[in-house]
Image 1: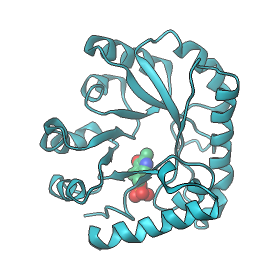
Image 2 (image 1 turned 180 degrees about the vertical axis):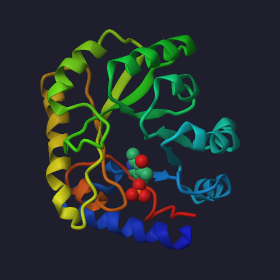
Image 3 (image 1 turned 135 degrees about the vertical axis):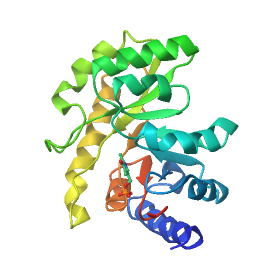
Image 4 (image 1 turned 60 degrees about the vertical axis):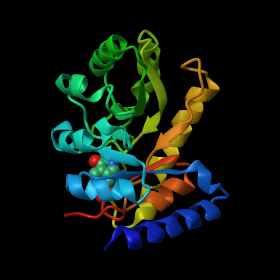
Length: 229
Ligand SMILES: *Cc1c(COP(=O)(O)O)cnc(C)c1O
């Protein structure tokens, strides 16, 4: 399928999910996940007007970032597990990092962001479903983690992120997305960070409609939107 077909197809599904849940279309932003495609195709994605690009490994992203990001094209989102030794490559290039899940990573990111004179915009990744194979902080550890993050002046938490288990029936993912929204609302109610945490990064090709209904503000779409090569 071509982008000229997938974009309106996905757009229609986003509109309908927003309508079903009484949300405005403008509350939901799409990250085009290009991890399954070449640099050339990533260029076409950007030309098509999809501005937000998601990659999950620096090794795979590098050539694409150098071809486009370095020229000021696109807003880059790092959505995968981030190894501490890759922080130096990623912070400063990616506008958002969706996978902050441990203190040692926060420390390294803060150091790099301070050196660059920026604030690294991060999502805290949570393992809401409790699957052993998933990265992310346990929900029970969120409050303690947030308290410790206050020491890092070059990290700005913009939201929470999770990955739901793959389900043949997407409806089954709903409790995971609902829980992430409740966790964000709790942080805000308690003013845990001293500022508002607006975003929820949740929903992939298989389950983004349910995620939107549960409050996603960023959905991350690879196969359904960008395709695979
Ligand atoms: C690959 C990936 C996606 C996109 O996956 P699709 O199911 O192809 O939409 C979204 N989020 C993360 C963290 C990913 O690694």
